Length: 548
Ligand code: SIN
Image (cartoon, rainbow, N blue to C red; front, side, top):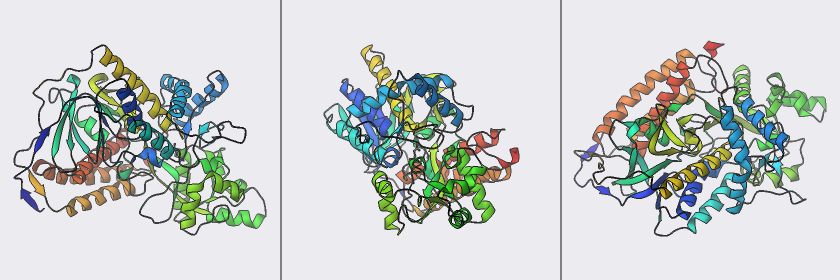
């Protein structure tokens, strides 16, 4: 490993803020905006630019019932969420989130989010896997991008001396009030500035809104920023991490080699697209029948067919691919109206066209890909992070990084944007109230600076890249949709080896973004494997063939 002895490694103390928000997806932006509006001093730390987040890549939409008087519709949303969660959802949490959907969706609309409407001027609601009927508001096939656009726009209106946006900055670790005593609270965060300097940011409140860990797998629908940073930081600060073995694979990512992964929204199946193997397609075409669903392999796996819940659909595809030796299955749209498809899914149409696939004419090759971290930092009703089930003063987790109890063992499609905005609102209200009652943490003068002694500059990054690839390969091969004890133990050994390598570098080198991310990825991977070995029952997204 090429290293240079550090001469000018600087360690800067920044002015204290009321709230440090880490992450700029829907959860982080929504909360930052609320807090700034109430006069709080906020710093928002984001690894790339303000609109680089998993939210931005979300195609589907936000599930929710707008009419709170419609008890049947509310009950059906609760029932679908519970059933998708395979018995592990916390029903109280599910009910409260579903009930708040209407207010939070209206908040988004007030922020300027434009959800699609039909010819009658009513919101156009679509259906996705596991939903018993159409209840998802969307903006064409790019809902996340529209939400980010509107929130980033309203946030930019708030830019003043109370609001600092730190783009291309990365949070490294949370600063504990008393090192080794998580119960005593978090009083700031060490961050890596674009210059390579580590800054100490004292904060009365820290909000993790860092998203998930899709980048652990080679095939993912997430952007490369999804490296489990929030879980890594919270874990090292002593927070409770739960349900992390439930990694959700989205059944339909485009199976064409490309530098950027591409999701084919489940809303397309909600619109009538059907999952089929090559063999199914041949049978269907030979039959002359206009109903491809009668020939789909999915009928063998669930009565909901192609619109089953994600755990079932992804596992069914995995099983068919293994059985037939195929590289992918297909999403069939040939029986649907091509013009309507183009109108409803313009981004997908454009992407497919760039690969020579004509929507409504050609079948679309798809495979499952890592999509969503269902577990995470355990939080209470207000998004407070918990350590040994007690609130950790000063620390909140919202959005994908949080484990709220809503999703159980398998998240229902389009419940994630809903959860993010509900918990963001609650956490913001709690922080604002604490500030008004003068109950935010008091910060002392002697906040510790980052350890800077004898750190050297890491010159060669290629060993880190090789370790990253080894980690992603291990997770892809050994900790995928179907697990086994032998493969999990193999992954455990590999990850421990990588952990030793990276710890050695970590102790002696100045941090870089690659190093910080790899350390987080490894620590989260280790947790996923441990939790998978400990879970003794196949449920939801956790499937170990040795437990059959
Ligand atoms: C999709 O559009 O299929 C993804 C929506 C989600 O993950 O909830």
